[in-house]
Image (cartoon, rainbow, N blue to C red; front, side):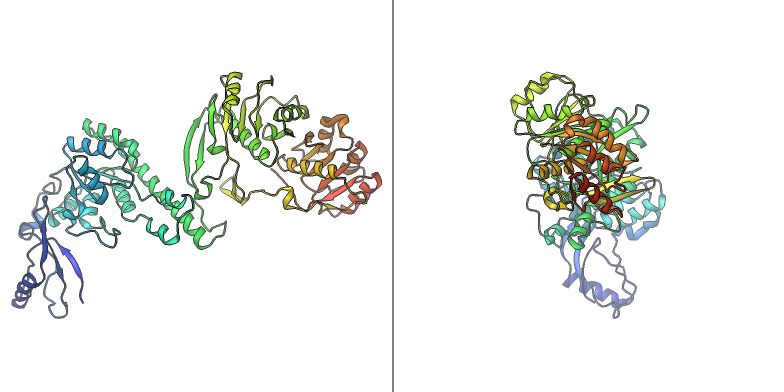
Length: 591
């Protein structure tokens, strides 16, 4: 059996004459590259093993001269804890000089690796390289650097356990009081423009870093672990104070485990996508990052916060969560819900469009080349409710006078921003990117989560099948498509009436579809004549019910999914009144 290893001794105790011969041969023929640790006075060498079948009595455990004498009787506090040591190994070297100088001024010996060590040395900080402690060079293209008992023993040893300290002394291992590590930039690499290949992605998975972070966090009572450069000043202040604040240590430990968990989540998500491709893995982790604490939730008695989804699938995928706020009061819980509903709705339309939302329901929608005209027409659909939020595909001008709380748009001109800022000090002005298609939609229920594909269908994705005798004119078909786009964003049971790219009325949230229809008809008023009606689901009844009532009101075309056992009644009813009926075969329930 042949192999190579690093040993921390220049003597090998033996019990037989044959073994002495082996020892002399070992020193003469195989010992090379001897180095000495400045902390433990242990000679290090590289050698080859020989067959243990031939020299069964030879001990391959190496110890320094002092260890061989009385390792079990050493004072557990010395020499293992005689030096204050900090281990630093970083991928992101932000504020490294600040950290290194600060620790050195506090009397810490700094142990480091590779590029981190070089950066510290260039900054004038004295550094001991890891291989001086491990007596082993980096190997396997850097995959093995810190995975060594001389490192992990010094991190994991509990200072209050006598036998732990005796073990360190026995093997000449020093303790680490501070461990500062961050990881290979896996997240940034796999989400970079153009992405990276599978093999390169694998090489960017950190192994030694997470091991050190977890070890230090587990032993938080004795080791301060830092994974975020923003914590460097707090760390240095803590060390200067000389006090042992366990809460501070626990907070750093929590942050360390959270850092590794998020990292592992990204690796897991990436590997699943690369390997299986199924949108619904058997286990799902959603990494959330706190963006802001909110004043309260839906109601003042509920505490709340807002988190950003850091899943790989959400990178550059748009949405309200990553919107930039240019102006105004801080967003509230309900502001986020309404802004999200408005943005999702308006993003469906190709032309400049204004959407007005109240309690997440679009109560006014209009598309025009002139965005100001679109705004005026959107307000027209439900002026009583058009006071909560305005959302635009284009910047608005200074001619509007109504009160509103939020404006969301994909971009603003400087003039547009100037006008909007002048309207109110509290007006929230958001700039957002359109949501990408194909996202995973998650919704919480008690004790679990529902997951589904996002509802991304547009009129271009489906067929509006004419099932009535009367066929819609081109303008009527466009109105039906517009109404259909609107109704998918209205809470079920949902009815939308529209004409000429403008919502005239909508009914939502009623347990009876006929009641939703009546609400929409009341809002549309006299303009219902010749308008298009869209329903989010099929009509269960036609005669003396919603379909007949719609036909009698003057509706010109109806778009619905179809699928009822009474679809024939709906067709017959529309034929009686000369109304065009379109089946989409796509339902748009929204609960």
